[in-house]
Length: 161
Image (cartoon, rainbow, N blue to C red; front, side, top):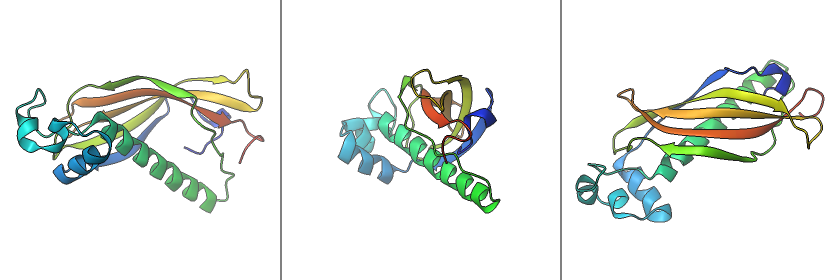
């Protein structure tokens, strides 16, 4: 987002982008990181509880993260072009409530949205705030397939950038 803590309000919603999970991408990711049969073979996927070649949940989360970073870079570039000071965000202290709600099958396109759900000033790191947000992924049929609640350190104005 590249905004300062003071400039972000609870409820701020951001469409991050979409990713189409091809059979080839599903198999390539699975072969490296999650080599389970239903992620590697169409027939095994069809005969599993998923009913088709299914993307690893870690693949779905990784696609989301990639889109999140790319969108943040785009927003920062646009802000810099307008001459604005860019807030350099800190790391994430973690996440919770990771949910793979429905299978993501070969051919599915998932669109990701992030919404700020809470914010507070950090008690341990002066000059920083902590944002909490919920990011969800919805397939082309309008079904929610992914959800995660995450936090991030965000600089307060005059502290970072």
